[in-house]
Length: 414
Ligand code: SAH
Ligand code: SF4
Image 1 (cartoon, rainbow, N blue to C red):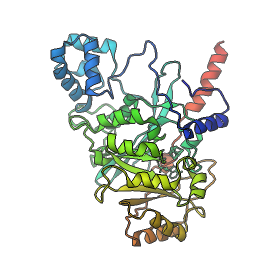
Image 2: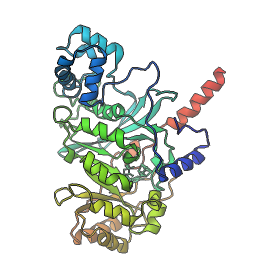
Image 3: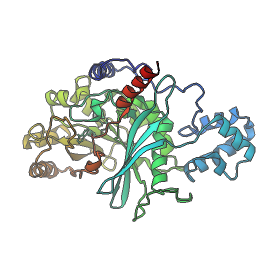
C-alpha cells in the first residue's frame, strides 16, 4: 500500500496531505492472498461474473443474480446457508469461494440521546493490517440517518476536525461501505423479513435507516470509485432502496470531482464551507489552497440536477471568534447568491487537543437569523452523541494505535 510509509504520524500526515492536495490517487485496499472476496457491494454484472466463476451457466446467471440480490439486500442474510431457494450445491460452492460476512463489531455504544456508534474492524487486505472505522446512527423524529465512513482516516487536515489528525490508512472498498449499512440495519432489526438477530437493539419507535450521509471518516471524493459503487448498491430500488434524494455526500471541496459526482452518482451534495474568504478557508480547510472558493462555488453552480427542490447544503461549523460574526453571515449570503442552497450551521464539537471553542448559542442564533432573513433555510444542527464521541468531526479510529501495537507484537515475536 502506497500509504503505509513508516514515518512519525505528523510527518506522514503532511506527506499524505501534500499528496492529496497534488491530486494523487490513493489506492483502495488490495485483496489479500487467500482471503475470500466479498459479494457485498458488487454490481449485478460483477455478481454475475462471480456466479460464472463457480460454474453457473450463462442462461441461469440473470435469475441467480436476482435471487442473490434479494437475499443480500432485501432479506439481509449474512450466511449463504440461509438462502432457502438456492440449491445446497451452489450455496456450498459460493461459500467456498466468497464471503458475505458482516464487518466485525469492536464496540457498540449508545448515547443518552439515542445516537449509536459502532467501531467496526475490517480484516487485513494484501500486505496491510486490520483497520477500524466508525459508523454512527442518528435517530430523529420521523427518520433515521446513518453516517457512513469512506476512508480510514483522512489525507486532509481541516484544523477543527478530529478525523483530520489521523493519517489516511486506506480507502474503504465498496463491500466495506455497504457493509456499514447492512450492519446498522441488522443491529437495528431493520430487515423486516429477517429474524431479529440476538442482541439487536430495536428502537422503541421502530425507526429505520431512512437516510444515508457520507459524513463519517474520510473525504468521499478521494475514494470516488469505491463510494460510487457502494452508493449504487445502497440506492438500488430492488435492494436496500435508499432513495438518492435521501443520500447526501459531503465534500470538503474536491472541485474536479463535483460535477462527476452529480452526473455519475446523482446524490444530494453537501459542501463543507466553513469560511467566506480564501484567507480563512485556506487555514481551516486546507484543500482550499488547491481549489479556492471561486472555483468551488462555480462547481456548485454547475452541479447536475440543481434546483430549488434539490438544493446544495452548505455546512458551516461555528467557531467562536473565528468565523461567526454577523459580517461573516452577511458575506455568506452574498457569496451563495444564485445557488439553490440550504445552510447547515454546525456547533463546533470539541475533541481532546482541539484549538477552537464553539460559538456562544446567542451568536449562533444571531448568525442563523441573518442568513434566514436573506431567504435561506439555516437550521442549527443539534449536536448528537457527543458523550460517546460520535458527533461531527469527533470520529477517529484506533487504527494508529493498533499499528503501533502490531509493530510491537512483531518486534516481540522476532
Ligand atoms: N470529509 C467530508 C465528510 C466528513 S466530515 C467533509 O469534510 O465534508 C462531516 C462534516 O463534519 C463536515 O462538514 C466537517 O467539516 C464537519 N466537522 C468536522 N469536524 C467538526 C467538528 N469538530 N465539529 C463540528 N463539525 C465538524
Ligand atoms: Fe477530512 Fe472532512 Fe475532517 Fe476535513 S472535515 S479532515 S476533509 S474528514
